[in-house]
Length: 203
Image 1 (cartoon, one colour):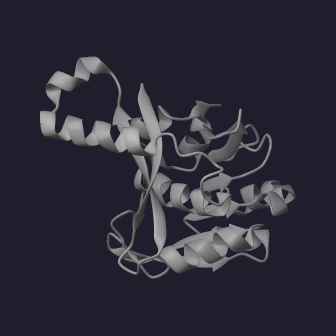
Image 2: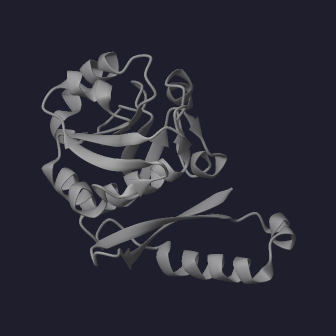
């Protein structure tokens, strides 16, 4: 079983971001890990794991977690060049934050392109979709537009994981958590790390 933490740091451009720290909390595995790494990982977790939704604006937390989710997902065309398009609909604050922090940055042989979506049909050209609460009613249309395509959907709406979103944010007892629909990852031809899925509420 792992532990989830969100920490803060600075990019080269001095804009704030947050790191998703995933560590293995199974003490049976400690002997297999160099002690220095264990200590550093444990320290990072202790410092960052208690950050709550009240400490930073929610749109910044969602933006940073989205970026870190991507690191634990594999696309079938991972090694190809070109643009890695992250489409955003229904939350201008998330769009503006992602645009400021990540637009144009490298992702392996690709580069991030942050795009505001004006229609569900535009989702077909994206690798990742973030759908905010303001457009939750567009989810079924987006799901239809990306059918059969390797697209990671990240949503912020009640019941959207059950309806087929890959990852859906959910606040429980004042703490930000996320649901994961493993079947959707499979049908979208995406591979997700067990480190990430162990942090999720599985649907």
